[in-house]
Length: 367
Image (cartoon, rainbow, N blue to C red):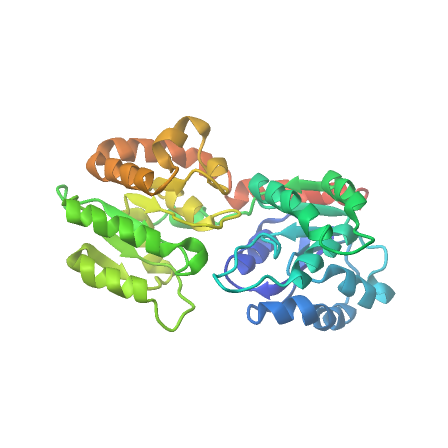
């Protein structure tokens, strides 16, 4: 089967998803992409640019797999001369209806409507987690009832019927050949922050917890990795100054360094207020980190229920308690981490790729 994969925002996890599936599918996957910048313009104008590129393709695809950053109805209208009748699957990495905005910034409903109309236009809708699917359909009626008439509410059930969960594939096996560097047997545990330095990950909560534990005299080192898109990150700079020699890495880690940090770290922490999947968390658990995670968002899906009580927290005091336990009981934390690893290994592309193939074949049978 010839699959045309369309990603208007091809960077970071979106690029890894597109390239990962292309590399692990049994089908012929052709990528049609645009650079990962100006996300609003990609959702507004990317369809026309990509439609022009699609019209120049040498072969007509058997199926289109498009990410949620595409204005799908516009793209299909602009390519009806060459792609009419081709089945379409929409993959939702995130959505612009429930993604949290920074304080003081008002949500523009235009982009949530693009997501909605794209779902209506698609033959199948895939969400990267059960939490994401339920979050979207829980908020959708509020969006549609905002408008004065012809609110489309009767379409919600139809779209939900054609929606399912298909996790993001992760290139986990690339870490298998990376060995953890030797560390002193008596050295303190290493905590890893490997998420973006952005408001939706709430790093100030994590850094406040670290400083309080340091004041208590709890022993630890910390690696503050993850990408920052800001000119300055004042909360990270302040924490670095307060924590001093406890900070063993500061700033974005390139691939080789990142792999070493994953293998070396003992604990990974999230304080996110938004997460639809959590690739960085999956990578850390796969590499042996004990996870300290919110008991909400997607995280209960990543951690099996028997481990929720030890790994997931409810509030800030609970975060401190879970983190304190992991740092003061390193052997038991390592045992739990080892038990969690097989559960996240299911997200490796070697396992997820065939699931994508089967899901797409079901939309385009007989090809």
